[in-house]
Image 1 (cartoon, rainbow, N blue to C red):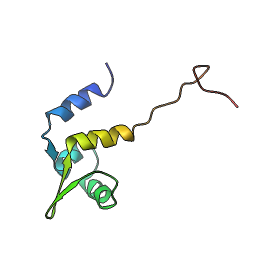
Image 2: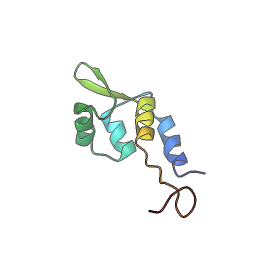
Image 3: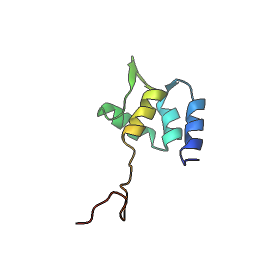
Image 4: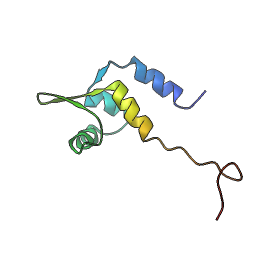
Length: 81
């Protein structure tokens, strides 16, 4: 089982549209930082008048696109120079 399985189970329990407060709890990132990311176009969001909402599936895709995948080491694909 991967380390992300419990995180994804919690994520699936969230509503389809998330508030910054929902993301703050899930991502453990301060709400001000989330709003800053949205303002700078770094995280996908939907504006409804003065309110920001976040599609949980678009946020999950955004996270996957930014996830670090280590390179294989010691003869398993990595080349030493």
